[in-house]
Length: 65
Image (cartoon, rainbow, N blue to C red; front, side):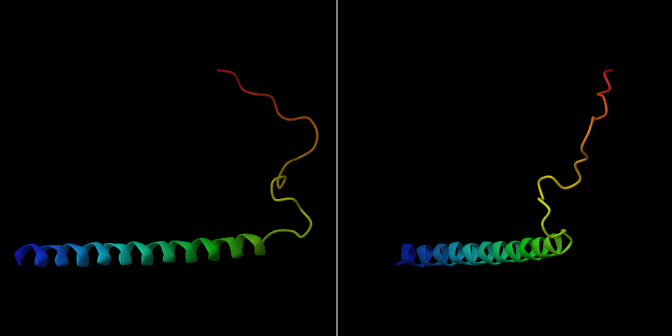
């Protein structure tokens, strides 16, 4: 009977760890979602986010040490 008790306690501990990790992941997702909303709100409509801040024309030269 002692082995059954140990297995039950280990299972409870594993399930508790799973629940904690799930809540942490859910919180992380919520934070990322909020950051994305803020980032999208600051964008100019019709502008490609990959090209944002790029200036046309000659680029400055590289500095070689």
